Length: 193
Image 1: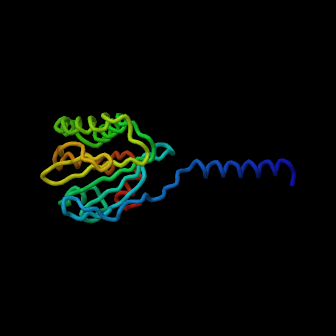
Image 2: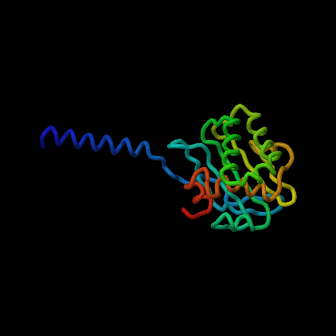
Image 3: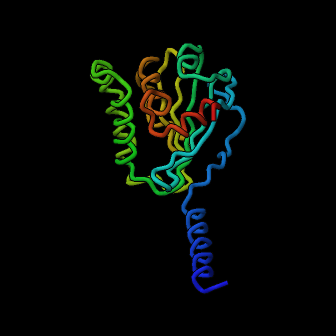
């Protein structure tokens, strides 16, 4: 074997190793298989990890009364629904609130955005009121029909519920809509990946 062949072999091995290290690993996050919300047992519909470039941002689990494979099925399903998050890195509270608002804007009509401005303002206030969520911190959004959506940080409710079923549908579209924040995460939440 000549020096050029040896050099090419070593270079190929280094490149393959570098690409393997840079590629994100899509391991399924760990969430409880069920959760009780207001006396209703919900099942884990799906769970996944939100990536930004190659960096993990948070794990997300979607709970519903029964498993569904589409946003449309989920929206017409009666009963509570819940989104559970686990931060996988330090996340600025302001950045998190603004990213939610961007996701709402990308998947909702201008009329819906205007109609639900008070609820969205409450969401921004909750997250921007915190300097950051640290890696390992939990947060959640829980919808109960007739009451609205309650936001939780580290298991503690952040004020009274806001919005209605239309508003929670807007929240769900951030991850499950036509322009989700992450298509792989959408597929994982709906169990279609």
